[in-house]
Amino acid sequence: MLQASQIGSVFGINKNFKDRATIRNLKIKNYKKEKPKVCVMYKGVQLGHESPKIGERWNNSNCNISHSDIKKL
Image (cartoon, rainbow, N blue to C red; front, top):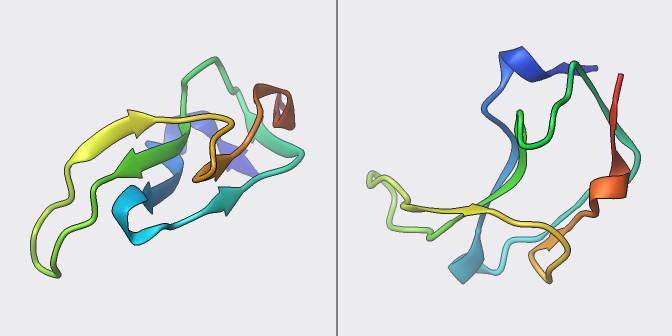
């Protein structure tokens, strides 16, 4: 069980590395819209460098996640 106040995001994926995340029927304690972020996309970089954040994404080829798949517990 995830608790919203304990995490910044559920998944972080690198768009340019073609990472993919699929989530179905996830329950998060105290979930509120955008808290926590569910699928955050980054631009992947070489090891040792920080990946720039692109932002939260839903329902695309990288983040196969619908708002209806996330429920408040």
